[in-house]
Length: 79
Image (cartoon, rainbow, N blue to C red; front, side, top):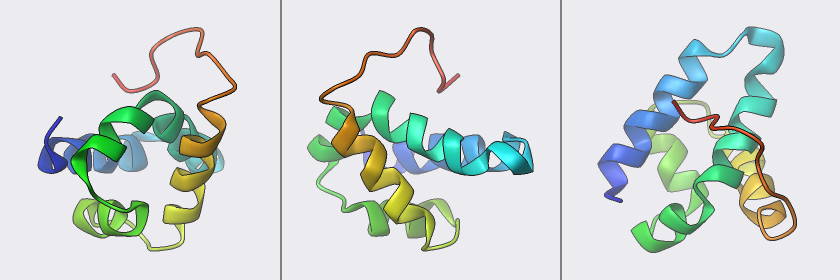
């Protein structure tokens, strides 16, 4: 998946999330899209900047990517 499309989807997730669920939404995005993020060649910080969301969410995105090796999502969280 192209970096621009990932950034667009991340931005959509960020802005559509309930304020109390923003962090969880970013982590779930990292889980669901870990392989695509790695394939894009973008570091989590670069992806958050490209999406126009605060830099602090790069850590949450990274957490999701790391935990993706150990979990399986029950339903799509990126649509």
